[in-house]
Figure 1 (tube, helix red, strand yellow):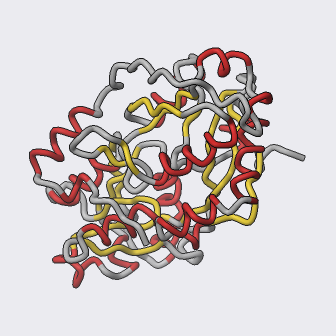
Figure 2: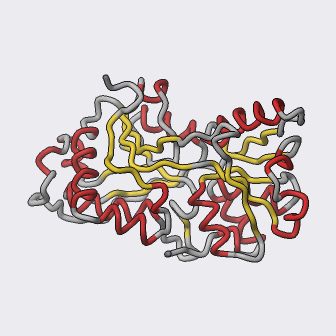
Figure 3: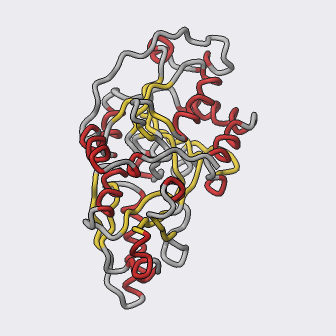
Length: 300
């Protein structure tokens, strides 16, 4: 299993600096001059606008292990590794443009600033009304807590009545609504949701006792614990607590011409083993799907 040192395991001042740096979109940098690989299998399927730009601009916030901003400024993680595999099929590179807040990234796609966004965010009928979604993995919501508080927090009932930090508009927010239904059925108080801009902010809320738990994806919880095993523990929301398994997708604005070639690129990396390699390398095989699917919530 591959892990990357999560920024939240660094010194508090560095964490605060990174969060402040991600509070607003970073200036767009000029993409590196690279010749498009016109001989790539799916290059001819790309829309003319992408061919002319020579790059796919993709929004991204700080969300280890999907995307981690290293001290050097390099972005590492599942997302860059997956993009490299997709780029081999499409013939153009991806450029990650850092942003913060789900709403900002979704509206940024609609305005044409970004060509795509890879979450992690679940697909819904409402989102598929505005965006094309290629589902490529699943997740269960996990709730991270400080290991020093394990005696009081390492119990599903302990989450009821607690303070849970999560990214506003994320799958965590909707999953906690279901968890609270279970709490109330058990005669327990519902948890309070504290909506924040990104994952770093949610973990910092736990570190500073602003929240008892940070709600996040299962893969992020695994990566965080592996990066600092003596500091954090986590609970995984069960089916009994309303978890289900949410489908996570790469989103593109409808009409930008990327949906079909992107689906074909995912199908290709499933077939050639690159998808399995990336999922295995990051230790998230249990979140894999059998095949990518386009717009599963709205397709007939």
